[in-house]
Image (cartoon, rainbow, N blue to C red; front, side):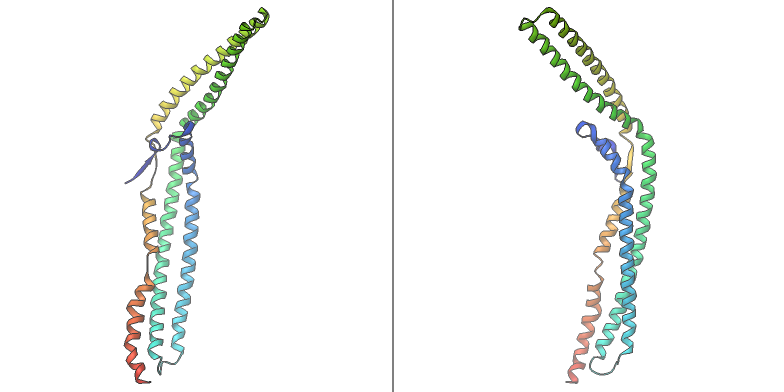
Amino acid sequence: MVMAYFVESFWGERNNGFDVLYHNMKHGHVSTKELADFIRERATIEEAYSRSMTKLAKSASNYSQLGTFAPVWDVFKSSSEKLASCHLELVRKLQELIKEVQKYGDEQLKAHKKTKEEVSGTLEAMQNIQNITQALQKAKENYNSKCVEQERLKKEGATQREIDKAAVKSKKATDTYKLYVEKYAAAKSDFEQKMTETAQVNLFSICKANTIICTVSALLTYNFPRSLEKENTVSKLNKSVPNLHSWL
């Protein structure tokens, strides 16, 4: 069974991968519903086609079965009936597939609710470290700016009052920078700890998703018209050729 884990996918620029993966899972049930609706519509169309083909096959009995084209009527009636049967069988398979997709969607919702509870702390830690990282960068830029300003005033021979004023600003910027360095270290430690705990959280088994994909693939390659042609139309019409020639 193939499983997907956050540990394999959460990495990303500024640790955004975890958030993206989580929200993709959150909205996964939407795409599941869309798929189920599409398959349901396809089944409705196939069923309507099957009924129309059955009606057409029955109408063949209303025409004259005598004369040159008697074998042709027989072929059309038989092939239409079998084609209707094949499409009806496809409807049955599509309806089964809809049930599987809906079941998958229900399990997906349950998995999301469970995962939401398990990773809520990690999401909070991730948002915290992102915010602190931004604040740390601003504090660093401000610190560098104030230090450069203080040195510039000293080199240019500014008054002591101006230098002292710049020194106060520089010290304040230094303290703020140190504070955010400490906050970042604590946030980073908390984030890594929570991420380690969350890393093994199972997002959702994609085994059923693979099964659904394989089923759809099999249905799309269900080439029943060709098999009908080989089995019925060609062989029966070939057999009728001598009879047709006898009337010429």
